[in-house]
Length: 318
Image (cartoon, rainbow, N blue to C red):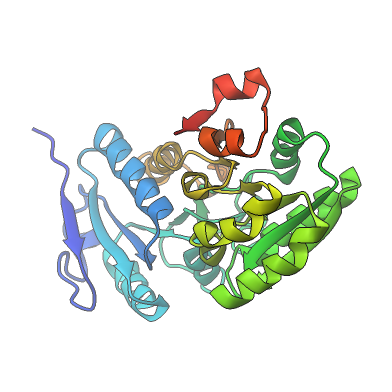
């Protein structure tokens, strides 16, 4: 019977396949999956990856380095894996940024990250030029604003809330700014370092805008409930670039399906490590049909009515 071996690790103790294992058993393919920090999005991507691998390549052995404390531990895991694995999956935007600084010895795959081109790790997403490919939760900003305009057709001014120093912060602010310029929407931003600066910045921009955008940065996403007392009295809605804040009080959001992306990631790993396809022929994959989430009680409390076509398609949060 074919087998799927899952090795769970917690750093700093590294157990599992010894150095030279790639050469010791040429019939077995090994891949490491690495990420630092806690992220539900990354957990879902990993779940989708592992489930699809069981179907596509049950003999593929996966060694996990989950939720590592910092990038120093993640780099340690990466350096070890370069000598013991046939390939490495490095999740999150921080992982993609790290890969942009190295010349890996083995094929590498990104996932659970923003646009790899913007992060500097891959120049050509359709034909990756080096040893790195993978998947991204990135959604083109034109598509995001098509959804925003469908939900809020009279929007005249928006403000995006971002966490200073987060890999996605500058990317999402720039993308939002460009779309606002294209559509003639006034643009404001709050770049926050902590909860206090986030709340103070929101108080500053709230009177100027009719929509707040929650970026895909932890400080913004984790504090939606703290923003409600500032925004709800004026019935200013929040729209999120991730799905989790919709459960916390954002009225709507758009996001890639992380489980689906994890499956796409598994397909890319199998294409390269099992089937031997060149990375240049394995493009970076996106979710072609990102999901819309709508907080129905919040929609009603704000006195909003969204189009039936979107309501039928969306995930409705009660």
